[in-house]
Image (cartoon, rainbow, N blue to C red; front, side):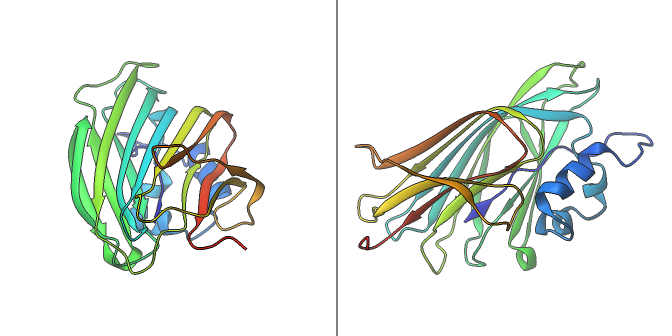
Length: 228
């Protein structure tokens, strides 16, 4: 699966097309799945908050398909009044549909699955209006139905400089990969670069920790089967 983060909703009132949109286009490219999933909301998203820290936990099932995604996102308000955020998760396989959504920090306001785009749109409310530079924590978990083919990677895109990004991938003991590697893309779909092998520990998991992330796409990929 290929879940992706999106920034928050457009603010109230009139706002000129902002740096947020152009920065997102630089990473996503034009006519992206994310842009199509949000429609008119894409022009104005991420006007009120930005992410400081993101922690993704990806769990694969016994056939190597995506089973669960759990995300914790620390957001900071860029202006007073921010009270909710939008997120988009996109999947590679149309069989990988969300089965259950749990918000453990924040309150779920919208959950819309767009089957044609293989994307889930979540609107999560903070529970209060933030003052400028206030921080809030949003945490959610999504259980996913098994897809046709084993998952091969997970990517997180960001258009802004995250302070820190942590990705953990947990494999099922009956479906362990022959190797894992980290990589970076300047834009969604562009060639990966900076590929480096990463090791797996006794809990059948691997992780990547990136500090002071520049805009782009951070990914982890793995191979099932016998290494060549």
